[in-house]
Image 1 (tube, rainbow, N blue to C red):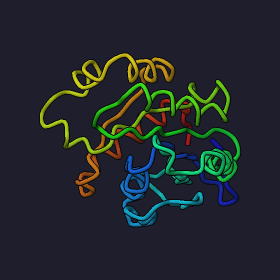
Image 2 (tube, rainbow, N blue to C red):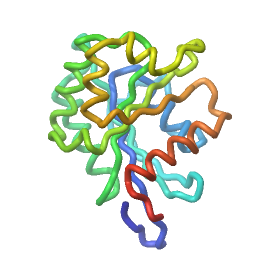
Image 3 (cartoon, rainbow, N blue to C red):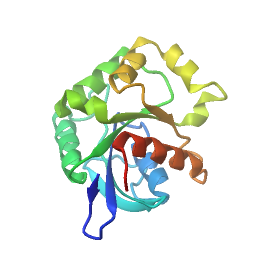
Length: 192
């Protein structure tokens, strides 16, 4: 947490994940407005500010990595580091965006590779956000995690089993953002 010149506390959120994970639409969902151009490939970090439930946020969208070599790994790592620099100084949270679909060993290795540029401490400041929650089709996220297997469970262990599910297709359901913000406040020991 950091205090900006106007005296309001500022919470930084850095969105990380593979290509097509829903990072940009998550940023829009959090801010409650279209800011990140979902559907268009993010090639450079983009930072937007907003007020959500009385909290000033700086949300940073980063380029996604590719599991199949479709993205330049060096540039993606460089942009991830740049994304951290765009977040406000002080405490910020990494939102590791994982779509509710299959999660493979390759996904797990890619996450470790790309998040590795941030060092081991990244995991203590990371919350997994499962996007496209409507794809669960009534199944609980816990059953999904169990079925996904050891690769996903290993990632969740690294970040202290902190996770939240959002339905990107339902941006008018602001309760999911309020719930997310409450989790983030607890992670930051928010005194806002």
